[in-house]
Structure formats: C-alpha cells, structure tokens
Image (tube, rainbow, N blue to C red):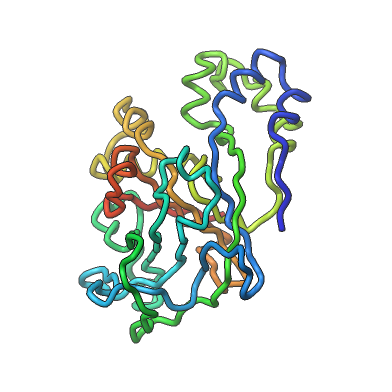
Length: 286
C-alpha cells in the first residue's frame, strides 16, 4: 500500500510562508484506489474482470470500430465520506470502458485531438437499486485480470505547471520571468512526488504523465483545432475536473502505451446532474 505524502509538511519545509499558504489553499480532496486482497470487506470496486450491468444496458461499443474493454467499476456508497465534498454520487456505481485496440489490432485510437474518437471511451453510471448481473465480455476482446480495490481519502496538489498556479501566483510564476520560483525547485518537487504507483484515483488533481490533461480535453470540447496559445483554450480548460484516472498496472495486465495513464474529466455542472455521458477522455504515456 502506498504511503500518503504530508503535503502541508513539505510546503512548510521547502516554501516561503506566503507561497506555502497560497499553495496549500489550492489543494483538492481525492480518493486513491489501492489494490486489495480478494474478498477484502473494505473493497470499493475492481479493475478488470467482467462488469455487472443492467440487463437493458448494452455493452458500450464504438460504432464502426468495435466493443470497448471494461476497465473498472467503483461502488460510490463504499467510498470515503469525502465523496460529498468532491461532488461524486453518494451511491450507485461508476463503470469505465475504453477502446484499447484489442478489437482491431490498434488501428483506431482515442485521442483528445480527435473529438469524434471520444466515442471510444465511456463512463456508465448505474443508480443504486438497479438490478444488474455479471456480463460476459464480447468476442474479440479479452478481459483484464480482476483486481479488487480499496480506497482512502487523500489531498492532491496541482501539477507543477497547472493553470491554477498561474492564476494564483500570476507573473511571478511564469517560467520565462522567474525560472527559480520556489514551486519549481527540485527539492520541493521531489518532496511532493508520489514515487509510488499505480496511481488509480477518483477526483482531485490528475497526475499527468506529459502535461496538464485539462488542456487536452478542452481541445476536444472546442473541436480539436484551437491554437494552444488561444486564451479560449485556457478558459475552457478551467471548466474541467478530474473524474477518474487509471494507471498502467502490471497486476491487472493493463499497460497504456509506455507506462501511460487513462483520464476521464467532467464539468462540475455535469457532475452535479449525474450526466456522466458528457465526461471526456484523454490518455498520456512516457
């Protein structure tokens, strides 16, 4: 089980007091999903295997390409109480599906830069009390290994170049004007780096492999062809929150590119209205 980093202690040790105060005010709660033993009573869901779906709900398909692979299921009622603060449902189940290339040998891929490919990633919400049964995986894809998950509430911090840092610290944070800003110094970055994985998580800030994922889904939301310097892109990126991320995980036989990560993001109003079909997807790898 991975250990929780004391972000407050790291900030107080490595940052000036005023910078630490501002940075700590930006932290967001999240829920880390951790491998559990089979039959663990604290299990909140699972990776892989075969999902439980209502009889009337069809297995998600990317039309013209094929069936999506099942990634994970989470029982919201079993999660830490911080779900209310995060805006997640208090009950029901969230299921995640992704077109991982098994069906067509990797010919079609899901990219945020191609909004039409968003059909290759899906979030399904099954409300509490809705009868469901285990569904066999469609022909053409193999299920991932079932790994049970437990959870714990964590504090999460924005990545080193996240847009909220620019909003909070302004010109002083610009890499061009002050490359030695305390938040960018190696000692502080090392102190708050996880160093442990896999990093499966609900809510909070994403752990980007390459760059801020909010900008990637903003591109998809705006049609996929917005100049990266266009202020409209930053404005759109600020509207998206991490819903879930699923890391590469050897135990589940999951490998997203070269040690990559899958991300689903959602707008707060859609989260509040339980419109999980409007969540958007991106992925990154080394």
